[in-house]
Image (tube, rainbow, N blue to C red; front, side, top):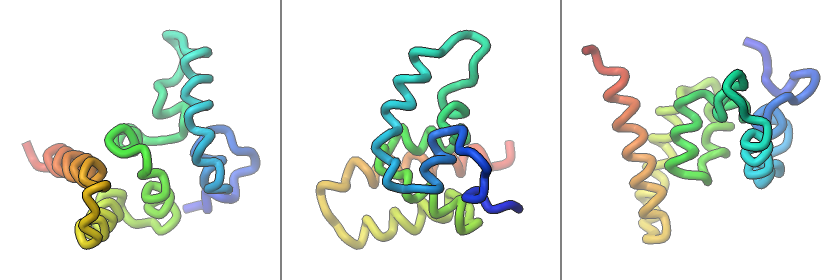
Length: 119
């Protein structure tokens, strides 16, 4: 597997974010650009941003999850595994400010488990 940080030219938001996490705030501009350019033949928003459908769904539940997605991609761990670790950390911190984030992560993990379960 090639190192995603070695891409010649960043072509999506997440390509850029992998190279420079300080770019996290620019995602809103990328979303605006997609809306400005969007047409029937264009890529879906998640692809335009450089996210998988699962990563995008996770980001919708928790816009602060980009560092977690980055860790999963760079470490080679599954996204569900990294999200589970992050959820355990948030549970230990017990901050009520993180209730919405924890709930979103739980919902996303439950959906992933349901999709992975045999029919």
